Length: 385
Image (cartoon, rainbow, N blue to C red):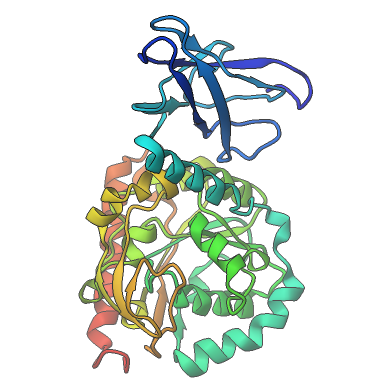
């Protein structure tokens, strides 16, 4: 990796078929390169303008003074093939389609939006801030949500541990608030504890004054790099593999564990040789009436390309009534939240020195589903619990 200011140039070839004399311009999006001056998921946008002087001309806007190293992609100095305007951009293996003025404006807006997402910093976790917020969390969890958290003794008393949970409640993740209260009161605020969340949740947390400062609670952007850093520091880490796909599932699927086939958490536990602790919760999908994930709508609007959003959920929630996207979250209904921590799993002890990822995934999901089904059987009425 080159250091900032060390020099060096990355050329990007923009292959075009425009008639000679055409004035072309646009914004080339480079994503998921590891620059010395940016985080690994930072976007680098490169404006360009040129007049085509010969057929099949390759435009090469330089990117200067930036180091780079992308795992899994050949990144020796040379060309990253790309096409833009009337076609698509391909940079570091990621495609960003642009169709006319509207498409370019949307892509530019998405780039700027994602630039504003706060960078992950484990040092931002603030035990004093968490301690000050515990009374609020207690009122929310104990009085409003009547939360019950069982099995905290199943979490190892110290050292790194990867906790994996089912995700509920849309963008108002009340089950996470309830579990955070239980963890901080059981182990104390000084024990390092980080929660991984979608970038959008972190950004919205900055924009909404009624939401506690999630970064000071230890919430960082979801990704293997951040999880690895936290585990290597000796922290407890909470991940939700189902992400936005699971947390926006219809309310009538409340008692289903649905990670959407995402198995990265297993490799994360194996690579760091840490115990895996499953956690199940129920009640979050009763805090609003969740109707649809809106996957088709998200694809039509290209939200997956621009914001890494696979869903555009539709729900009925307070105070909005019909709530599309849940972008500003919602006021949760006072549904009883029940959370159960299951016994830890040492993957190599149970599944051998080289575990089969698919077999481990099936077993973890089966154990979590059995426990969640039992929690559902205990409930008498929606909201009441």
